[in-house]
Image (cartoon, rainbow, N blue to C red):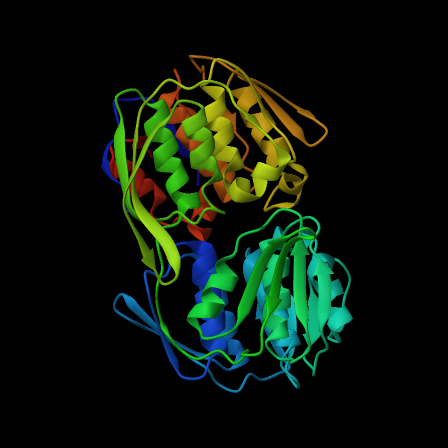
Length: 429
């Protein structure tokens, strides 16, 4: 299914952004590992999350939806079982870690063509060092057999929250020391959520880097969780509000964890008008209401150490840079070639088709923005949901409509994207 975004009037109103994808995966998995019944509100209901729900049921857990609330009960995990993770790298990598620390559990992990092309040894090698039995190479399908694990001190290069989380989840099944060291901190949702489930996690920013270690309490106990709105999904209506003249858009209850707000910090540096209000703590995370109004943007220079805090938002940041008159530079983007698509290549091809100069200099992206963007192109998404939403965002502010060749995969993270954008006045259809 193709979709087209057409330039039009200002975007106005509140964007109903769904629950955070990263937190939703973790809430389900930890709920299925915990003693008792975990209650989750605000869970993202998307294809990726449903893959995790199905996996948990296959492994022996119980997941039920009751209106807006989801109940997750632990059960004896079983095996051998076959787990289809669909397009979700988070489901595959985190569940590999969870299975690795459960003696007697054996699971064969597979996924769709996109997921099967993504590297997995960054997870399986440290799990094997802990003692897990792994069958397979760097790509799915991969079999993981759980056992009594030992400890590990793992240097997480490049910084990956999925790798760190897999190790921490595996470490719940051992009393041995488990430590992950990062030069630049990756997302810390697993650490925050482990605290909610009663587990000990210590985080230290010391001379050796950002160090995360499990403590003595490692048996998760059920809790109640409320998932905040996803800043990665909110990025599309909020960037659209920045680049479409006269726009004023609000997202309520958005996750503003400092390790997830890199995009918004850069937009402010570019001249974006971003206001936060009603900041509060919700299930251990910082959330706020975020309002963005249209503003002229200046070019930016993003350094590699800033990228982990906005790695999923790079495609839509590139759209903002397209409307900033001058050269923007974003460094340290090697990981973008290993996402659901070669995102770096897809961004460059899409911008070029829309009349904006963009080149890759190694793992650095250079975008030669302009006050007016022609648009008027068909963009190849490579089956990537964030590429599709990014270029539909561009089409709302371009001089001519922009069409994307696929749209079904948007459901992996933001199933109601089109309806939410239309509610703001966007011409997408």
